[in-house]
Image 1 (cartoon, rainbow, N blue to C red):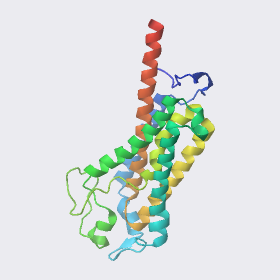
Image 2 (tube, helix red, strand yellow):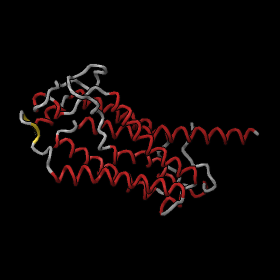
Image 3 (cartoon, rainbow, N blue to C red):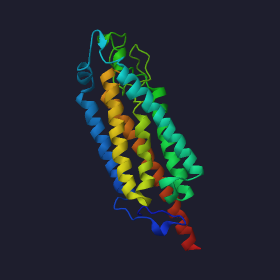
Image 4 (cartoon, rainbow, N blue to C red):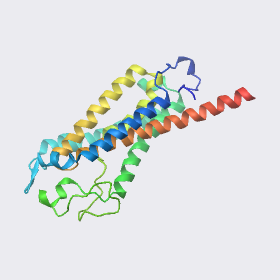
Length: 245
């Protein structure tokens, strides 16, 4: 058993964290159980019905939601990712506090979180709420757990891709928390708020169920946790080899 610690030329300045990788793993499992309980509750459809009816979703084409809270946040997300790529190669701001390996791990965690969400989405047969017959579409409701069972719609709606514009950055918290803990806390809060806002916008528009947003957040968090654990195991192995030598 080991506590997460940064093995780098700047390791002496790293902040010891009370949350070990194992404790974070326990939290990840708790969040998974909460998600499964949400799925079992069957609240997705009742919530969708609050905003939609036989004629569709009134807010689906609202310009404020479509442009201001859908198109522009997506562009901003890409700009932030490009800024992170640039900062990984030529550090700026808080990235100067990170060792090169940490900067690459931060970037990799965000990119892999995005890819993980898109990978699940591509394989999913679940359609969006606005595709359901009761909301003016052609599909019938099928749980996203019914893998391989089509619902008569276009599918590929689960999990929420739009919310991943923000939630993908959740994975970066695992790297930042050891080196710049104060910034890491602000980063975590900002990402969670932004992701939930984007998820709620899509809920109102009929583009996603709330479970889609919650699962996106969990997937991105879990990617960060797994990468952090792999990095810690590698550092632990190198330290053990050095001591043995």
